[in-house]
Amino acid sequence: MDKRNLSLVLLVFFMIGVMLAGAAGCGKSPSGPSSLPGGAAATPDKRDTAQQKPAEPSSTPPVQAGTCTAMEAKRILDEYAAKNWAPDAVITSLNLDDDSLGKPRMRESKWSCWRAGYYSPSKKELRVITYINGKTGMAGKAMFENLTLQPIKWDGIWKVDSPQAFEIAQANGLKEARFVNIRVQNTSGTVKLPAPVKSSCQLFWTFENNEGKALYINAATGEVYK
Image 1 (cartoon, helix red, strand yellow):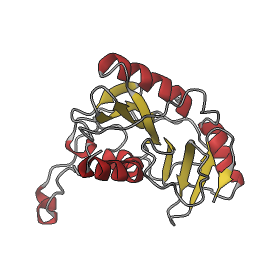
Image 2 (tube, rainbow, N blue to C red; image 1 turned 120 degrees about the horizontal axis):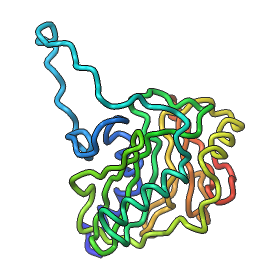
Image 3 (cartoon, helix red, strand yellow; image 1 turned 30 degrees about the horizontal axis):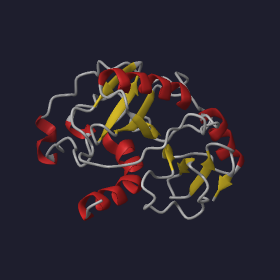
């Protein structure tokens, strides 16, 4: 692997969860300018605020809690990725996409907004695929290109779904979270895990609150790292 690809690999698994979570708000199209890393909609000039017309009501259905668990969302996203992008697509990260909701309510473990990263070995690309209000979509541009990874398949590893993960987080004192993510350890062997997570853990949940306190849960066993 050359230095350029190694640098990309080092960045991918530290940044992918944050980029996916912040890529776009729930209910927004993944092809919009704010749906890609580094892309954000233009900020209106405050001096022109008085002249601006009131915003048009959104045509997007309101977000409803209780739509599907993380595992259910993955099944939907897996099918879409294979049929509409790459048959060999492998999920690398899955986020609760809650930008328009504010803080995820820890009493809920099912949501209608999920955002995932998928890697295709044949295409050597990493793309964002979303499930929002019952509709599945894909960003028009790859998040990373010319990327060589050794993806880890979640099937057979993942045992702790979002309802169990939320219960474990609450039982360990985390009452609210601004960031909820499940991802593989890494697919290159070069990226360090968060300090509390054991090296033997291949797939783990991350819950982080507004104060930056993070709690990690082994997605195979339910073991807590903090």
